[in-house]
Image (tube, rainbow, N blue to C red; front, side, top):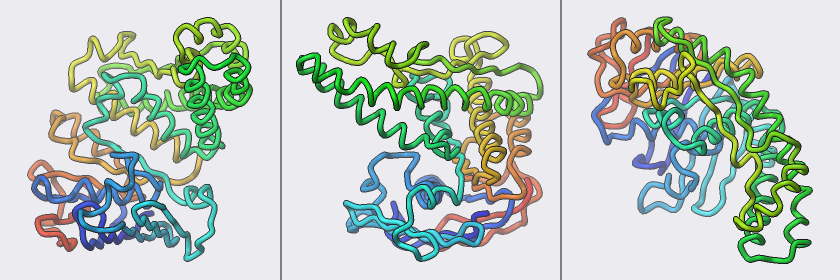
Length: 351
């Protein structure tokens, strides 16, 4: 369980410290005070990446040379330092710890209004969702993903420059090896995710509709065969036309695509179901209850869906929920406690 976090020069915070309680923890305050940045700091501490940007430099407080994050999760001490160029991390004061060991300590589910892209956005948003899930399952997914991305960049650069075929096809073998591993792991992820997402959707929607999802691979045959079959097409297009970079996660709501036929409330429920499905699958596969980071989503839901969604938040782990008001909540103490940032208060308790 996440116990506490400290931050120095992260986003708007010169210094920040907050301790947390089991169950929902509500960060309450006006807009533009840094509530989302607290969630982002937790995600960066636990997963070494931000859900909002791929550039750590964007997380550095203006005018500072870098940031630092410290925290405790299940009795383990985690530390991250970013000096503006290099990212360093340590676990229990050990500096030379492998990234896989560091990342095995905790899991995270990030839930925000932008998740609507999982339903209405391009396939790239759904691939990022699968990547975030696959990496946290600890199946060797990250090395396969990085190897595939390197080989794909190199092959596409050679295709764009119309280099000789033997130079281009030198990357077929590493691309196919990493691609087959990604295809197999993503297929497994979606197959195992579906029952969790379907159950979460039934809860959020009140049992009114049925959500289904299936994996649509970027090639339906082994990668080496796909690259051979698409060779002429790749030369004409000057890019690699088959592979996991063209994967998609296809959703259906009562047999119809929610991006086209569902209301906005139904679409948001689909996206939330995917995220809570992710949390359920991670817990089953790793034994680690993910920290749920929920960023100001409740104002977009009707009261019934809001109440049912709150019921999905775990009571045996930490969930951090940002909101501008607690007027819609019941069961909280009359006054929260300051966390060192003007205008932000922390309330803990079952909703």
